[in-house]
Image (cartoon, rainbow, N blue to C red):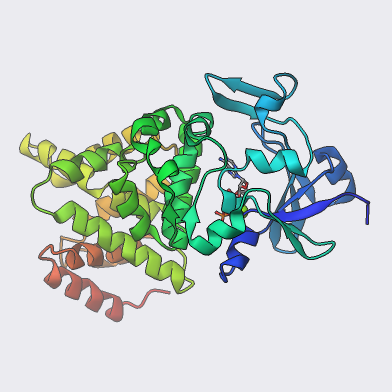
Length: 370
Ligand code: ATP
Ligand code: MG
């Protein structure tokens, strides 16, 4: 109505073409962020690296971005590149500039609401049909510009069942180390997308395969490599399978639980050392929890409520062992249910905990929780 151009783009278009239900819709337009804000009352401008408009639409938020040119078209103004890395990306352009800054061909399809056509400059439709994930442009340059694209490659390939094109696949081993320079806050966001998208198990296996898991959970990765008995791997697989199941059944999953599971083994190793030095089990678990979490947040920074939840789940594992002692207080703990689920996972992964599981299952029946 306001005479601007607007297209649907990104995951929404891609997922519909694949016959999947889109998670959300992204819109791209030639209106500048300020102009978008003038048009929509429920609009908030966000972002530094990318300036975007979030337009509230009922319960949904539609992400609206302005056409941008790839940084190298203009060395001046609002685009900024350091050592080949994109620092700021606010050089505006038109649709035929915007397409080249996108990561994968299948993410660069524009749906024109004016005539219901798909605008495809990069062969994205063909790649979708062939089931392959291909980067736009030179893969090395695209990974250097933004190393997170390597994680995105794994995410889309796992989630959508696509094959990573060899040209996009080969540079990963050499350039993976660039992920160490990504701010911890961004890695946390990406980690959530990787593990809370409903196919965490597959994604985890693939991250391990490409040796990228260590840039997200270095402490865990190290133990997965060194432990002879397969417990950590089995446990994580159960945890992720469980997460996927819950999400796919429409239940919620909290990142705190996932964190507790992914860091369980490093925490245990530290705790065992403390116990060997004479600390009580509870003290050992709390101290080990502090260490493991503070190391983790230097890689993926996380809101306190998630790290607190992980700590609670771990401490409660100790308290759940003390059968018949003040079980009411344990049952009333706000994180009891999460801790109980965690205990179930440990049992599924092969720890001899059946008696404990039975006990706490019974206790809950005796004392139904509101
Ligand atoms: P999802 O289903 O996870 O939302 P998506 O493809 O929509 O997948 P978004 O992160 O929402 O992913 O981004 C929307 C679009 O913006 C992408 O499809 C892609 O075209 C572009 N994009 C996002 N992140 C990058 C990036 N790091 N590099 C290049 N293009 C990107
Ligand atoms: Mg999206």
